Amino acid sequence: MREVDIAFDGESLITPDSIASQVYSSASPIKDGELDAAQTELALHLRVAQQQFLQDVPAGQVMARLLTGLHGLRKRFSPKVWEQLIPIAQNHPVARYFHQDPFTRWSFEKPRGYSGDAGLLDFIYGHPSVQPMLDAASPLGKTIYNEFTSKAPACVAVRERRDLLAQYVDDVASSRGGEAEILTIAAGHLREGQMSQALKQKTIKRWVALDQDPMSVGSVAKDFAGTAVEAVDGSVRTVLMRAQTLGKFDFVYAAGLYDYLADEVAIKLSQRCLQMLKPNGTFLFANFADEIFDDGYMETFMNWALLLRSEEDMWRIMRAATEGLDVECTLRFGANRNIVYGIIRKLS
Ligand SMILES: C[S@@+](CC[C@H](N)C(=O)[O-])C[C@H]1O[C@@H](n2cnc3c(N)ncnc32)[C@H](O)[C@@H]1O
Image (cartoon, rainbow, N blue to C red):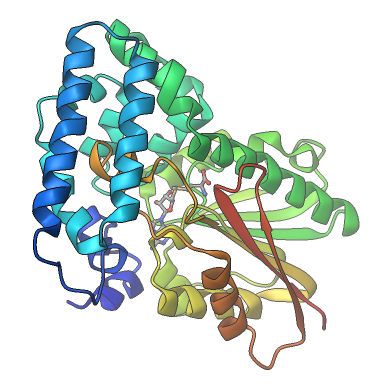
């Protein structure tokens, strides 16, 4: 199956393998000696980290040094070389230290069978549901989580994203006088719902939260019972195929989804989302930026590969999705530039 076919089939599970051919695609062949040089450098970084752990060097210091090394390696060598370094890091004895952090381990083991599930995001949000796993972690695991992985810039950006989305929802609700209809695609556990004042004050008419994972849909149905939130089992595929009648919305958004979608699918999904907007409605999609620092650690010890996008990548999607439409497109970054947002407002 070709990569784009996998992504089009929204019911296919997102695994590192399923997106690796996009993330690490590179026309340039590996140059003579390049792989050897990269492997040697990686071996050195891993060995130093292992020795530091054995010598009880503070975990934050070990992590800072290693992350810098991994980020540098990923940046300097071609994607094809980097792809070959990933299993070396994952199989190195030092991995057992990082996997004492329940967040890193969850990402690596993928208990729901795919990358980036809503349970993983709950580690980032510090949601009470992850507390028992944190309590059961070793002292080193707790330190890695508390002092490092949960505080990583990418995680800070995800928490800001949740707050920002709740703010967008509240702004839309206050401008629609109790008639606001919202659609969240790939809602996960809809943690931004708990931050929304409009939801609390019952000034939202309908908030459809769609996800392909029945466990997440069940969790949203339970947590938001009796509110305007409707938990819906659906996927990118069902949205694209118009297999569900969802209606029209004032605000449609997707966060934590485009990072897994190839451009072709991202464009088609954006076009479909724009069709579901009422006049003056807004569509927003978020993507991890290509400036993130944790990329090397995420792709190795967390086995969590993402399609990182630049400003130009985001504009390319917005331009293609809005051709011939009367819209206003804007692009913004979060405070630490780890997440970039494409925002399209329908003008008529
Ligand atoms: C990284 S989580 C983001 C959850 C939430 N939006 C947030 O920001 O916390 C990604 C979510 O996308 C959902 N997902 C992945 N592929 C999907 C698809 N093809 N169709 C619908 N949902 C999908 C997963 O089930 C998961 O809940």
